[in-house]
Image 1: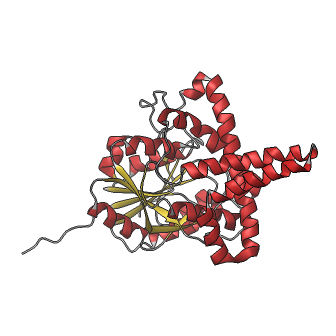
Image 2: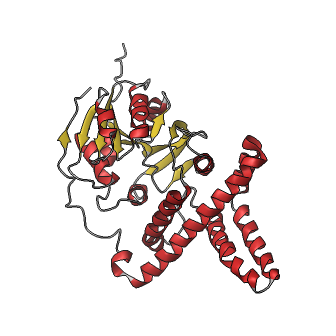
Image 3: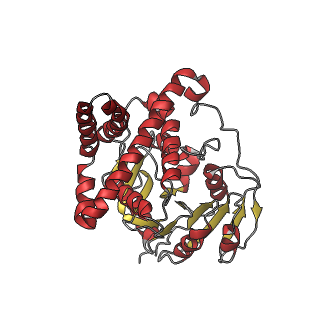
Amino acid sequence: MTTPTTNPLVSVIIPNYNYANSIGRCVDAALAQTYQPLEVIVVDDHSTDDSLARARRRDVTVLQTPRNSGVAVARNTGAAAANGEILFFVDSDVALRPDAVAKAVAELAAHPEYGAVCGIYEEEPLIRDSIVEECRVQQAYCWRMTSLGEVSFLFSSLTAIPRRVFDEVGPFNPRLRQTEEVDYGERMSARYQIMVTDQVRGWHDDDHELLPLLRKLYRRARLRVPLFARRRRFAKGFESPARSFGTVAALGALASLPLAVLHPAWLLLTAVLFGVSLSADTDMYRHVWRNRGVPFLTVFTGVVFLTNVAIAAGIAVGAAQWLLSRDFRNLYDADWSGEGSPATTMVGAAA
């Protein structure tokens, strides 16, 4: 006679800061998972909109940080309160497919050597706000599809981690607000495999305004430079050599445009650099062309070009900052292990 197995408890941890538009859909999707047993914990990082009130309307555990401290602290706070054997981190602008947790648990059970199973975003946005958002969602989908398999960074917005692994690797660095997932992936991949699978999916409400999107990509690229310098190799995943050269070529194409004032022949250099930028992601452009057509592809190409420029500019400024600032060079080396998560306030009831 065989003894029936019991599914491990999964704790879905949702950090939130001012995502009133999507927090309800995110929590509802977590509650609608086919997998059981499951607990849902929302950690509000001292929002100024009504997202906290929206979370409290659901039958979930709601915690609040006493001050805005960043997503790393919010995730650590949720992990500290969680009872599950598996921690499933999902950002408050992501709504999971109903089978996302079940698929992630199955992957971890089949592969105990995995430190994390990361999912991907769907091709369609959670909320359709603008064509900029649709372009960004398409780009994110294509980049993640080319990253299936082992990676060396963490997609912390949609990922499942066994509790034993989280306890061994340690919490997210509470000092990092922008690149905590890259730092965590570096630490985890030194001990465990991090896998990306298209079996675990969710819909993402991405940035819908161009300038805020470009500023965010610029900041994140700049802040990754100390890790690039320390690692001295490309990460496994969508941070490929071809894409890196493509971003540099995009910045070069934009920078060469003023030379056309001196002589129109310089436009040839701009065209060549623009072509090099496109060639770094030919499969992505083909995919968009086949699925969305030429008019959308035209807009998509412009948005991707500008995101590449923003990323390359961030890397260039970060490289200069790395040369000039010791503190910046040591951004990921500071000893923060003694720092705990801030005290939290329980503002909801456990499900």
